Picture 1 (spheres, rainbow, N blue to C red):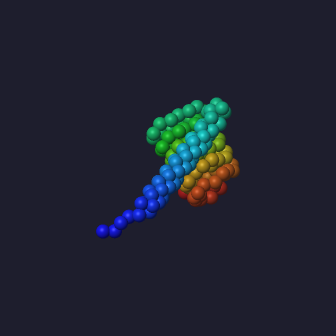
Picture 2 (picture 1 turned 60 degrees about the vertical axis):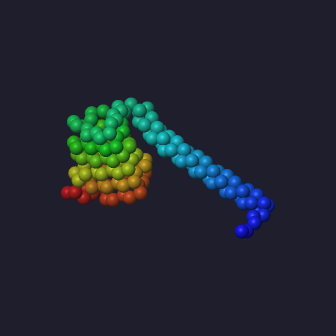
Picture 3 (picture 1 turned 60 degrees about the horizontal axis):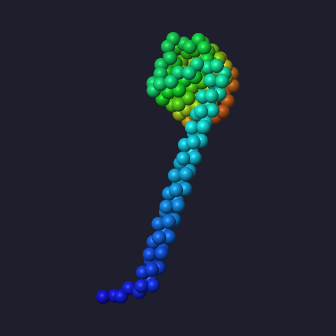
Length: 163
């Protein structure tokens, strides 16, 4: 049987404690970064919402929203999925998830979310502002400017690729 030197055993215990403390510090740091990122995202959403509420937009929220008939006043929409099958007679601000726009939208559209799809035949008479967007498909037209950017932007805002 091999004898264990008590001094080696003490060194091993100290090394194990040091490793455990290091792993604990890394875990706390990662948790802190995750919390900071969550607060930053929450702040972006809160700022977007407040910007349009300050401009007098009416707020509408839910899980899945289909807005019919076309809104007559500026509308702020928060949902996982938004569809405007008949367009809008006023500006829109959409945030949360995915949006599919059809018809004529008289005014500006601001978008903060995952994916935005301008269907063939859709016309935004004002500007399209992409605050944060992952995927944007422009099969319709934007008369004004397209501001901001997206991870993936498909289509030409000046030509309706669906006609």
